[in-house]
Length: 251
Length: 201
Image (cartoon, rainbow over all chains, first blue to last red):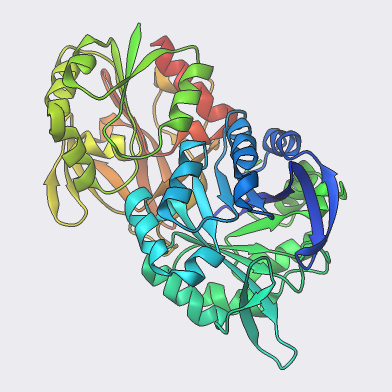
């Protein structure tokens, strides 16, 4: 059995740590650097840092936040938001990111996956899939923080990004994001059963049972946001409870 | 004690530098053979494929400087790909000659689990080493790799790690030569202990 990773997901807007519902309706919950350090010290296995605004003129501030965070923590840091080119990715690697997570940038230019994987290694290229459940049934990949439809089927797209050289898949369920009603297990199962690379489930974690269900459905790692940011549970409590349920976890 | 952190274009040195700083190391980045020769200790980091790593080391004759430092009994710490490059040869994208500081090959993990292994895994300590002061069996470290070192002499194996049935060598030590397959700079407080131990050697 492999060790499941617990990964706090921190979404940032204008220097604030925020949390929304369905990638929208954003609420300020704190300062990202402070939360990042707290989570790292509390036993987080990695951190995901997402810039929700990703506007070019804010980028300098964002990079400073990334750098100041990376200077304080000794666990892997994944950075996402607004990365469109190899140059963008380089900028974040130079400032302390270990991996980049890209959604819109690779939908617009799938070759970017291969370019980044060749230059920095597959392990540094996380393909981010932000998925909505369709009213008509089935699922669709969305870009631009859930604003733009792509027509892409997530299962097909997951296979494609793996083939292009992605090292991991960050699978976000937009329809569950911020709801704390559990991950979308059906889609998680579909993606993780065919993926040969690790899958990080993201969006919807509200209880320990949600986490256990996701692990059973094949998640290699669990991204957690609201549960932590709104202080419903600490990382220590989450990990201790998973351990009690015989899940292999790093304490 | 001056430590040369060898910069040969294989990966991101941001976090290795920070971990060295945290550990109170007197270090500098070395891109030329002369800089390696002047050092008292070497850190050989690295991410990526074996052949690209060796190409990087052969350029500017870094590899010869490393081999001669090893002969002079200077402590050398190889991290991840850096550990693998210290072996005789690597079997990734064909067979490539390594630095040959440790006899043995580098080949793919034999496992039922997903590759690359990305995540935390435990060490099982087989024998004592000053590099592992304060670290015990069962402590977790962060791994990112598909390939592992298979040293010919089992006595150089300090720890093993099990990934889906493959008990591979995760820390090796042979006199002044040390290698760790995981990333201590990404492994929290336990990882920092490895750097501190190396600095103190």
